Amino acid sequence: MKLPRIFALWLLAVCSAFLTGQVSAPAFDVSTVDADVAHAMRVFHAPGVAVGILVDGKVVLAKGYGVRRVGSPEAVGADTLFDIGSVTKSFTGMAVAAMVDDGKLDFDTPVVQYLPGFRLYDPIATQLITPRDLLGHRSGLSRYDFIRYSTHLTPDELIQRLRYLEPNHTFRETFQYNNLMYVVAGDLAGYANGTSWEQLFHDRIFVPLGMMHSNTSAREIQQSPDFAAPHEITKDVAAPIPFYDYQAFGIGPNGAVNSSISDMLKYLAFHMGDGTVDGKVVLSPKQFAQIHRAISADGDLSYAMGWIIEHRAGYRLLLHDGSINGFTTMVALIPEKHTAIVVLNNAETALPKAVTENFLSRYLNLPFHDQIDAVKQRNDAARQKSAAADAAFEAGRLPHAPATLPLSAYAGEWFHPAFGKVSMTVEGEVLDLHFDALTLHFHHYNYDTFAATDPLTGRLVASFRLDAQGKVTELAIPLERTVKPFVFTRGGGR
Image: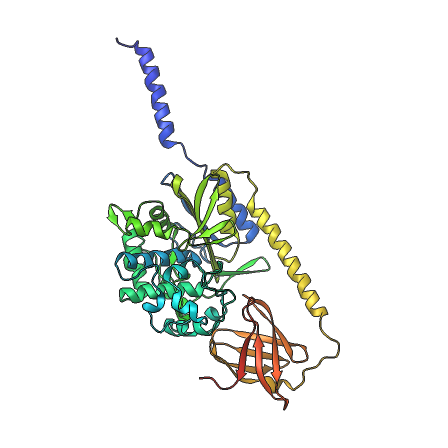
């Protein structure tokens, strides 16, 4: 039976409109993200931002905002390179998994069987710690981040000095985030492959995934025609700062990857797939499952191989943030929905996390609380608390507590096996303690204690110890808050 012509035309129009709507209607209103980014850039004084979003496996946003460098007109784009910081850790997990696929490593074989010279402070941990333990942050060691930006070392030298870092927990007792263990994991993977970890990342991740602009070097990123400069924000003003050179400190598998929105969208799409790219196997199904499998737990969160695991609105999420001198990053995946977001920022701000959290709340239809203003309020409260602590510290000075000896008596060379030799000099009324890459400025506090401020650890109160003859023989500095102070001895060492 033929339909009346007018009815047929009407039906065709309706069907066409329906189909067109299905194809072209956005799965997520990206204008909300544009508004969030604009708001967050004002609140956090961020110079440049890049955002990429996949919804149902399709790119719905790949965009730059602001400038690559304050004072320059070049705009941030989808191909602009940023240092992604600790998001690098999931690349390290992939690199180790690739070596497991090749039969060159095993997740559960002790590291010492591959690296006979590897030692930790705890002999039991030395004999038992595995690549899975390294990647799951369950070594028993606190962060010990001061060494990775104060002391110039080769990768081998850094690994040699791990034996002088005392644990604050029993091996496998608890989750403790540790950058240095990821350095070991990445170097181990490179060693197993007979290459550097940098070459391994390039050959087994960047090339197969088509991430052709990504790299692992502060020198290489600056040779690119399109890169963002790192910035520091002081009193609401952003200013460029030097790149952090991971290789100068013997590290990198913990945070050295430089990438762009375009490349990172390929990376996130891979992690929501099945271990293949265009039908070619990058990781076997077994190892692909391993890298997303929880190893350790921290409260309601779990940690896989470079991924934090959360559950929201009935979905399993894979997330990680990154922060390094002048850059911050956030990635979040909802594998079951083939949906992901990556936010890159060329300043150390909370912008990536706030924008990501707003996206997740909207996409998952969770109760919405704007995280941009909420984070600002928390930051303001933290600054007020810090100012109050500074005031209390100053109030703790004793009225008549001069140094026991002239400042020159505290100067000279000092040694600790983890840091090597450092030197103390007198500059007016200040004692300057010189590490390879930074100087701590100590001002007198009480008697033989002196105080300095470090950007990472905050206030440090160092204590000099005198022997029975009144000579200065030891210097104790709390360079890691969760363990007893490091004790440097006068001269000596190697």
